[in-house]
Image 1: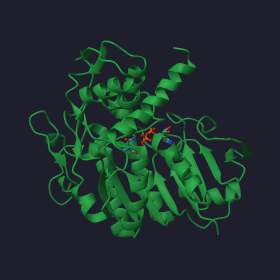
Image 2: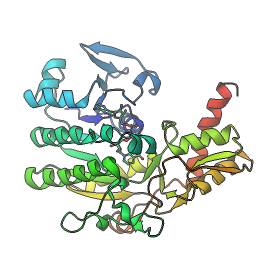
Image 3: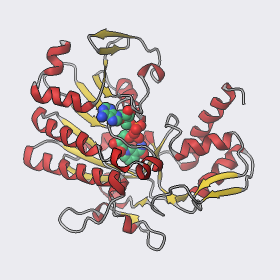
Length: 352
Ligand SMILES: NC(=O)c1ccc[n+]([C@@H]2O[C@H](COP(=O)([O-])OP(=O)(O)OC[C@H]3O[C@@H](n4cnc5c(N)ncnc54)[C@H](O)[C@@H]3O)[C@@H](O)[C@H]2O)c1
């Protein structure tokens, strides 16, 4: 029987890249869920979009391999809690269980949301609690839980003391520290639930801790596309949040997806691995790079009232290199050029 995978948050940044990858590299079916609170409707990001309906479910594409259920994932999880075969029966789709389950539905947002509305982000705890309960009942073949580098203790990322963050800096049997706001707490809790699901229920789960993922079709609420767009418009003076000396570890979405598949093939006990480049890049350096790509030298204007988060957050990739021999393929310059070109074309279309 044809496999069917589930992608929650499938219309968000990571989700839609994953859905496109699954459709491109497999012949399998994909069941995608999103409430479109942030995500974009598939007609906006799928080539040759065409769809028909089974009740309220969109069946997308000529091959009818993609299903789109629009709504709050918690509602669907509740329906499946009441009736394990809810999807199969309601929509007459014939399958036994989902093969790979990618759980990207979450309230994320940029720094503005993480610090500006922390309690809405805390709702991730309710999405994840329902999710983990469901997988222990449904027993999919494999599960991917995206944690985040925000789960690491903020004390290791300060101005005075910042180290490359190693997987062992989170150890449920020792010291956990304080993660980054409610977002980090929900991710840390999610990792804990992943380990419980593996140990007590025999579910095959792998967790990732992506650092700052970016890509061509990321929302402008995130720094990389926002800075690229402003460089394409030759902003001068160039505004930066805070001093700009704070740094992050940027990793391209294509590399993130490559690593996810490698991890699913090799990890099943709920343990978590970093996805980063291992390099710290400050926002000033990022602006310099984009300005160089755009071919000008702007003055810098710090905006000291904007939220900046921890000072320095970057990955120690030693464990990943040692265990999997993996490293990202896309260099910072190549990745940023790709994002820049998209933003430049966008500006040209707008006639600016
Ligand atoms: N992008 C990164 O660099 C990065 C880094 C670390 C972790 N992550 C994690 O990866 C996952 C995906 O992140 P993203 O960047 O794609 O975020 P995103 O905001 O682009 O995507 C999340 C999607 O979930 C949807 N959603 C939110 N609540 C929902 C609900 N209750 N029911 C159904 N859909 C819902 C949103 O509409 C959105 O489309 C998140 O768990 C995030 O924490 C991402």
